[in-house]
Amino acid sequence: MNLIFLGPPGAGKGTQACLLSEALHVPQISTGVILRNAVRAGTPMGVRAKSFMDSGSLVPDEVVVGIVEERLQAADCSSGFILDGFPRTVAQADSLDSMLARLGKQIEHVLSLTVEDDELLTRISGRRMCENCGKGYHVIYDPPKVSGICDLCGSALYQRDDDRVETMRKRLNEYYQKTAPLINYYSEKMILRPISGIGAIEDIQSRIEKVLEGSIRDNS
Ligand code: AMP
Image 1 (cartoon, rainbow, N blue to C red):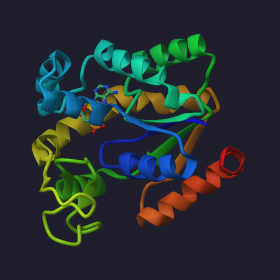
Image 2 (image 1 turned 180 degrees about the vertical axis):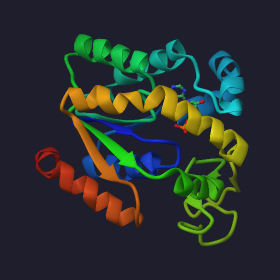
Image 3 (image 1 turned 135 degrees about the horizontal axis):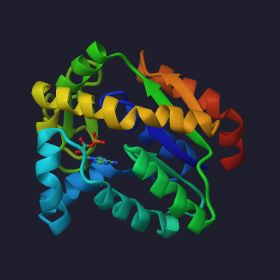
Image 4 (image 1 turned 180 degrees about the horizontal axis):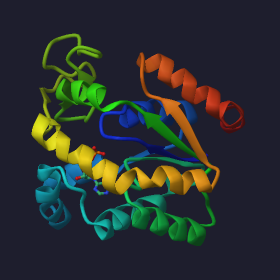
């Protein structure tokens, strides 16, 4: 099954994409994670992307389209994939359509997580991430067992620079201007599945599973 998670920063796309990836046995493809790894590794792409990311702006379309195009051709995408954080502009969505047509694939559902701005700001400011394995936490909603330490690998947790309040406002602006038009884009294609992103992680997970019910049974 080929899926997209759509939603503003902090809506829970990464968390839910990770859970669903385990349930469906298909890879989660997060452009944010791939870009952060490139920044950390100091690759030419990472160097180019860094200033955009630090300021809360979107990275240019051609950079992310190139990343996804290469990733979708990997063998582990043959029985499906979950895109998390891509596409984020109409131009990216158009490019995705063309690359999927070339690969003989199509998106079946766009899971659109809805959360209000005040809640997004609260969530994001408490968000922490493992510097080694990338697992996400929240200081109030989803704390690690030992403060500041990853439950999975024991490495230190950090706050992403772009999760600070000022940058967060810019990211929300970018979302409303450039990404929100994708709600209509996919609604017109009849593949948009709006899901409330409010509540406990497990409750949101159940809502998603309900939407995908038949498809999950077929894929497992
Ligand atoms: P995320 O982890 O998905 O919130 O992404 C973090 C940052 O990476 C974003 O604020 C953008 O600067 C950049 N980024 C991730 N995905 C994309 C995308 N599809 N298009 C443009 N920029 C992206």
